[in-house]
View 1: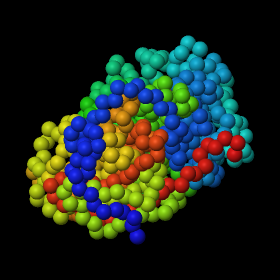
View 2 (view 1 turned 30 degrees about the vertical axis):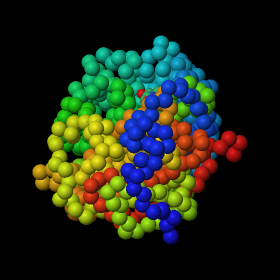
View 3 (view 1 turned 180 degrees about the horizontal axis):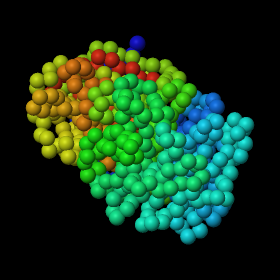
View 4 (view 1 turned 135 degrees about the horizontal axis):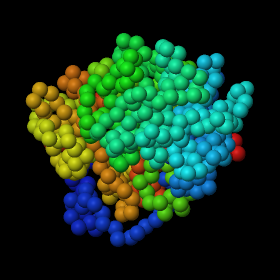
Length: 576
Ligand code: DQQ
């Protein structure tokens, strides 16, 4: 069974480190002040099972779709460099969402309506099984306009070539629309009146907006009198997404479906904060507007798919497996100079299935089932206690390329520290103030990831549990501040609460995907997700460790721990 090793005393361990040259035992959990302006540009930061092009710059996922047995992923791509520019639609195809074959760029700047860039857009499958792409073009005057493209040859299973009709653009920035804030058309949906609808992200008089257009033929589009939704709560909405979810169950729905058994999701990406937010609500068919369940004009109160590095996301309906799948761009937090040296920047999150929580209050996400086919060699453990100050190493898996799943049980919930409601305003601050080194009652407990043997480098993904008036509050933190000794990389601490009833469920679950420079964590079965980009020096030297720890005053029980190596699939290997 498990090659999980004996529990070490956290603070004894710290002491050993201190006597090895650090100034004090506390040094293990303080920032390392390296003066060295190191620029490592290691290919160890390249991921193994996350989607990346063979080289160069990538940002937003574009037009994901399933068509005649093939999954397509397009993406914002610079064919010439590892920085943003010359934006075209990169293209890859797959039969399993895990292995990807690179194709030539699908849409390139070539016409007056997109000569300065082919920006983000979405795919729609028209009646008769005909795929179509709507995308933003930056035209000869750098105005943002919305264009359409069709596959040249529908009998090509990979839809390699796309054509752009001369009647483009379909939508132009007129009648008060700011020509530099008008982009990213979503997947279109079909109304019961036989007309198509699509919304485009915009900012009008400082307010984030999804402008609605209607069409009978997908060629002539009319702006609707009212936007799909607008809010004073934020500026420009990039990459809006709008889709139905079933009130009960995990099955996904086609974007055009609507009935009393569905809720609608409106997602917007906020450039200022580089974060994706969503609201749940209903689609009022009569007025053609989205009506949120809760009307809040402050984006900080909107829900998020992921409380870490996760942006410009887009969903599609997988008609083959009847599920809705979410893609998102994970930006680098390394320097631009290192990006240029590495020759690439930008990866995609693993595709996630997304559905409405049975409580109706939020969405839930889980990596697509196919990802499990990459699991190898497991390490398993059951019913092990981690006493206060305990730290144990999870051995038997490749600590830089793994999938780990842990269930934590807390025998004594009563000793949880009291909860202060003001913490809801800024959970990342709480994660910074009460980090993994700050001993609490119930927690901190969790994982130390991509750790060096002396813990000078590690990413801490952990929980704390507090007692509120009538329930327990579970905080999830993903703290990158000690993830790398390199001073030049961005190392934030992320955090959010997990909406679970721990008394009822009896456990807190954590699944973490580790893949070189990315750590994706799913807590409470996917109710709270946090993704981090990290660049530890230890990835370069190769002596990488993975630990579970408990720095609370109360013993924590690991009722189940499973860890696997993750194999490297074929992702955009050139010359395939
Ligand atoms: N990226 C695209 C835009 C979009 C932004 C340009 C979001 O269309 O608004 O590459 O990352």
